[in-house]
Length: 417
Image (cartoon, rainbow, N blue to C red; front, side):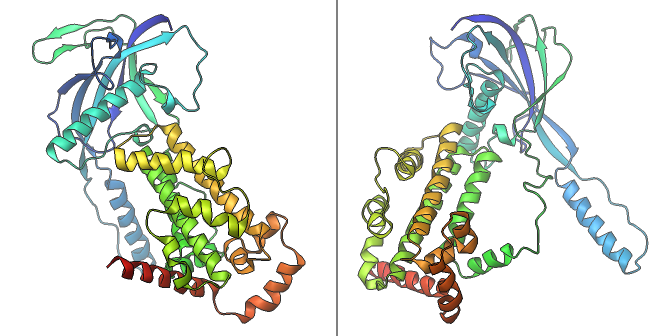
């Protein structure tokens, strides 16, 4: 890997939360561990600048004031009142390093976040910034937010200098301020995460979905909670850049899904809570997956090889173990693989339910409904007759299965005492 040319670049990174170091504080570092083999071009110079600007909360407060005015106007209230602008502290890191162009253009990455710091100037600066903030917050017990690519403003100002000028500084060691810096440009990042822009399209409040899932929430149904954990995992990944949290939340979602599905299957085949309580002993999820799903649903439920179950086990379950028990920090690609594996696992579960709909018609209707079965080409005469003649005459399946599952956990809790 040969270097074609290099120049200086500095980014103006305003942190997602202010960081309480003195104005002008300087830090020099490299990503990871520095030793005699570390190339000098990996050195990053950070200067923390504090400023007072319009508070991030001011817009929220102004929106609330606007709402009061709208209601007061509709009730015939008098004219508007004046409110002063709220101010807040911001920390901007001026991060300077070498920008290097490499002759080898054969490498490709899925996203700019995936490019290693030794190859990308912005990622290098962000990595060193996050490392110093992580060190400071642990040293002083400061519960501040660690910056990630996804938490930065989507537009980052930067400057370049064609000639590398290093100036010795008796206080801070050295700086690059005397270089001939060019005009300020704007680097657009590969995300559009803005706290004041909705994450999704406008909701159709008349489609009945919110009411259905609200009922699931009120019943504390695992069908709700597994999806909630998965949504949280997606947010941790795409909006917050918290890849470790994305892996652990993905795995939590999968565990809730698998255990609740297995419990529901045993409920529908008529097992009593006493019959199967020991199956759900803490820490035996992998064994449950290997042993019990195949006998109930058929299909491939092996943890080695290929397929959605094996992919989930290796890309999510085992990575989560490294994160939780070893403090491992997964990459963005590893977090994405964990998310994708859980989604593929859930699809596999639903496909197996659809295939076994005549054995588990209640579970099929609860999890897939008519629409899900139609989409899979499984809305057959048997299911039509069951939905029309049997389902209306039975008590709520959600309540029955929830009570059954609670009885299982009550037995497990009693055994632990």
